[in-house]
Image 1 (cartoon, rainbow, N blue to C red):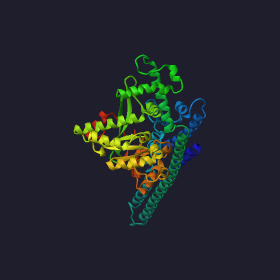
Image 2 (tube, rainbow, N blue to C red; image 1 turned 180 degrees about the horizontal axis):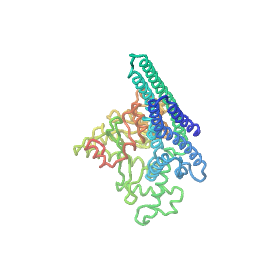
Image 3 (cartoon, one colour; image 1 turned 180 degrees about the vertical axis):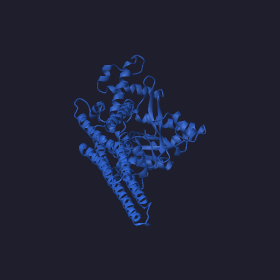
Image 4 (cartoon, rainbow, N blue to C red; image 1 turned 60 degrees about the vertical axis):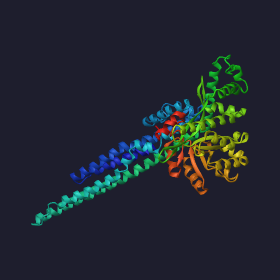
Length: 520
């Protein structure tokens, strides 16, 4: 393939040299020579880099196969260890930037970015001057036409029929002008056609290899969102257990010995006393991840995400303590505490003269079965005197599917009180929801980080078309890239949240947004 590409460029350049060499006169040679210079510039800045990138992408596919065949480590880890992944300077630099970014994301427990954020057709188009190179065929044709006019003008410049000799000279001048006009026009057309064909073929080959590389990288190398979440959770739990094991054992903090941690249920036996102690001491709080109007990028709300401010460990991710609370039946106690803290915060904002934005709180299956959720929130409205429009209720997809009969009445009661009820964790499967009957909630929240939506950005338009057909409102969460944002906008999505816009903010940081009316 690479040999064919270089031969194509060679044919183009040789054609230009031959056309210049066989020019009938100096003027034609100057015009055709200028065409050759433009063609050479197009080869240097457009065609040759395109060939180089194509070769690099082929090398990248070989590196993926090499990484997937490495024993003793995952394809993801093996791929990140390959120094010259593409064996192409520019692509290796882009991959190096991607490597540094994802390593930082893994260290901080974030979902890693997709490689097509740094390597895609648009990026390669910039480095191969696609927009400029695409103008070259038209420029060559235009120079040929210009040569035609110049040749004809020069041929007609000194026409004279006063004498026979003058008439013959005029005829020769006209013929010479026609010769120049015809030759430059034909040369421009030939170079234009050759350049256009070769450029299109080489770019289509590069785009094909880009698509094949990205597809293979997604399938073989990059871990799914669920795999990344499990890895992050295991790593953070391990680090916290190690820190807890170093704490003094006689201070009443509930830390156990290393032997206890290594036993069955060791994680829970170490963490549960710490969690209960944290609940008593009000160590649990919430952060707010802003929700945006996608077209204007204005903040229009936020989702409350629980965090644990441990006095020794610092801010602890919910991936560490939520599973422990769920398995021990304490999750509803924590949820009620967070719900009330959110209501308190909204009341404080109102009392300070700050106009609140709707805050979303999460309700789980355990909450639905354990307590009367509608009655609890009704009590919160009365206790803190807040309008229901400032509180959105997120019902988890699991709760919807597994407690639908009980949930239907709860949703109706919440809506009657004025709350907006959102079905959280939607994965695009309308059949699964409609099989239970009327969906009932006001909004579906499409989770772009779910396993079902992993690498399915191209499916988003169809999901939103179906939503409009069913008269359902959709918003999106887990927006991680500009590509997802653009597709969502085109699909008609107006609300969304994700790390592409903002990380979760502290209450004080979000309050600043409310006061200035924009994200800082």
